[in-house]
Image (cartoon, rainbow, N blue to C red):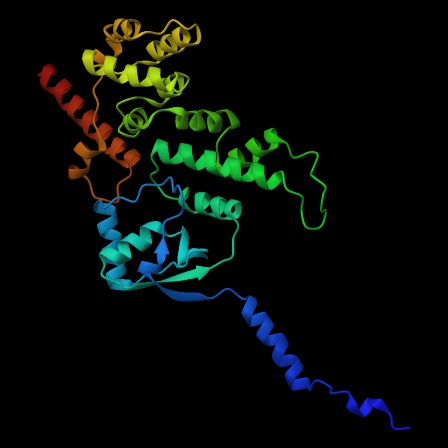
Length: 312
């Protein structure tokens, strides 16, 4: 009887190693050039992409050197790619007149993509309060959802030690914030857009804004009217009283106008120098801290010269 072994086709050594190399190569991340038109913003992206002076500087750098750091994108079911990290580079590439830009394509679920999107943007030097608030909220919600799903290794089993408190701690530690400060930033997402814009514009300070976030949306709308009629924004003590009246069910437009009409001595004595006013006197690379140091040094010199003049 002839052996059936002759019918068995063995894989050659070359084919074996070739297939293993191909599999490894296929799983390795690659940087590919993707048309700008096929790249779409991340859903509910909380970070503003503005055509400002910094964006023009980025576009000029891209014209000269190209995009040095690839974007991270993920495939969309409806076609094209969703930008996970690299929204500013994408916009600057468009300004620079490019048709494509380098990107790494990753297959990410919504929560993993959200976490990467937030973390990559939080590394920026200047972030608006609204951007930080929504970024922290989106990441915290993503971390909680991931914690609520069983791992592949322990299907059906949840981590009993991973509760909502632990999620807060993880997000706070990674952001370099205390848990309390993290929660205070997230409170800002309860503000209606016009009030949150005023926080970004520094018309309303952070601490009063947190207190105002406890007002009902309809109360916040009425507060805008009271602020406009009295040409004033709430101090911390005023915001705290507005919150107290709201929680007691006694906050009316008349109460708001009465509170907002109060004279705030601290504001009468305050001198505010915005970045827009100061930047024309300093190099673009100067941080607010560096500008403050220069201003204080100049004031010390001015004060010293005045003292010398008075002593003569």
